[in-house]
Length: 182
Ligand SMILES: [Cu+2]
Image 1 (tube, rainbow, N blue to C red):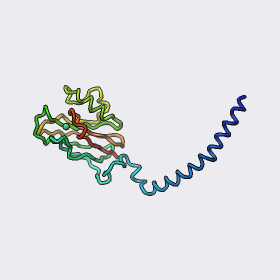
Image 2 (cartoon, helix red, strand yellow):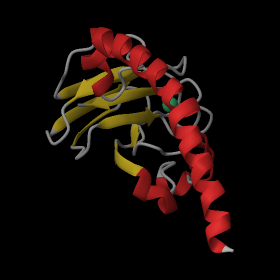
Image 3 (cartoon, rainbow, N blue to C red):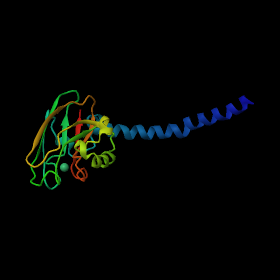
Image 4 (cartoon, protein in one colour):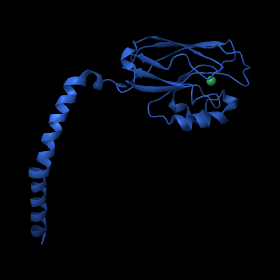
């Protein structure tokens, strides 16, 4: 009985491999060759699909400001994994801290930014850094009122795309950007 069942299964597998599978493979390899020759260096790097990433130079000093319009002045950075990076952040707004404070929170790749931002709303006593999500925080500045600034140093060990946000309630929708580590 086992033999009878096995033989048709093997025959089907061979048929698929030699016929349908083989044909598809030929088409794919032709297409892949075209893409590879045009974009090979870019595709190997993390964040290669982010618009404008090729115009961003690698830096070891990220300088940011945040304002009363809920905007960071820059939203895209490129750093080297394994290297210490300085991050300076200044709140250049005028509104009182209770209504309009800013920070920079760098999140691990794969973090659910929406979920983090929502949890941060409730973390008022911890400057809007949710204590139970610290494993997803690479680094963060202090929460800054008008005219205040902070400077931190951080390092990421792995190449990848790291989101950063301001975690003050209601801000992460517009105050967010990406740090690409090569
Ligand atoms: Cu903010």
